[in-house]
Image (cartoon, rainbow, N blue to C red; front, top):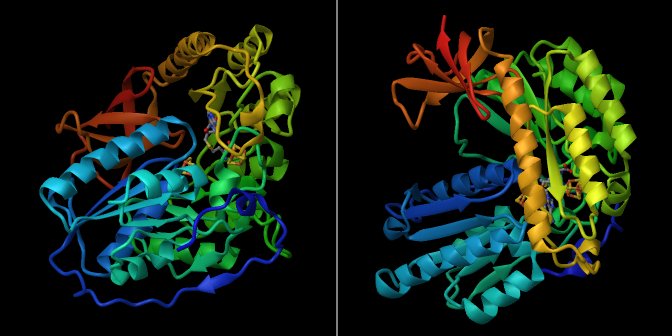
Length: 468
Ligand code: SAH
Ligand code: SF4
Ligand code: F3S
């Protein structure tokens, strides 16, 4: 048994990164006929971890199912970024417990992901949820098969709070055969004062560019049309690796594989270079879409957040990207109600939104995370005020989303068609190069292709179009 430890998770003392080439094979008959239910919350990185977990389960013979009632193993891959994650976990556990007590005493319940890296969560699982069988963290997904094979009678908790390694030769059961996630970097060293990620995911470590390119080339060979390069700060790629490429160089190298579309998330404004903007501008297959989290428009709050840029620096970068890549779309993340955010601070956030007119924005109310510096601040702002701010911000953000989308009406744009629309099966859906969701008529037979679509109507969150 190994429990998470916040002090260990905080440490950044070890410059060494081990690159571990996994050589694992399992007997596919071990759990033949048994079924797994997997639910994943959180960011793209966690979604991609979910694809690894699925591959691991299937390597033992499990098949996927989409109800708890038909499952032999249930795995919840959690996210810890905000407090509401806790409600989701315990709500879900309630259902699993019921199922295990009433119908299936042998049901194996597993918890993993970022919440499993939290001390308080694991303590609570031990005290109040003894029916949970296994708990593992973000650093040891590769031990999942062993944990399942061990069949302990007792709760089996293996969570490492380490700085982390890089594992290669990982198999994924990808959700799509058109677009794929590709990790380029793990962890985060930025320690923004509100954020739990550096504690749940370890230090920043980049994969070797040779491995990344090899993976993308393999995806091209298998017919994939799009890759999204993943990291918490993709543009800090390679900085901690002697002699490694910069992110701009990596982008160029991935572009050179000839894949139809290259995307990347998330870029930190602090690490954004001119070279990056030029590569995005000059390579046709690097999509002109940039997610550029602002967090706050007040330099005072940005400083307290530890974001390493001022409002002015952010705006300068923003304008440069818009100028150099005129067809780009830019989206953002904004937090309202950081401890003691004043009306004046909030007004500055609105001002930046008015100036940037984002294509869209994810907005959040600040949520204190145990162990982070911001959580220790005595906050005088009431939840009522925070909720009003969020409402006001959302009104503004949505107005600009609609405005940005309206500009597409009457235009013909390239759309990668991904599948049949869930709401209306006479339509298909896909994304523009600028990451706008489009529902398309007349392209039922074009799934997996990039086609020209005429936009006939624009809403705040999607476009309607017809294939031409
Ligand atoms: N690495 C990315 C962010 C990953 S987390 C970056 O630096 O931009 C995704 C978003 O969740 C963040 O951009 C932030 O807006 C939000 N977030 C993170 N911690 C939060 C907290 N404690 N409360 C509310 N929102 C938070
Ligand atoms: Fe969190 Fe900041 Fe790292 Fe993003 S850069 S993951 S917000 S600590
Ligand atoms: Fe959530 Fe962990 Fe991602 S906290 S946002 S799943 S890195």
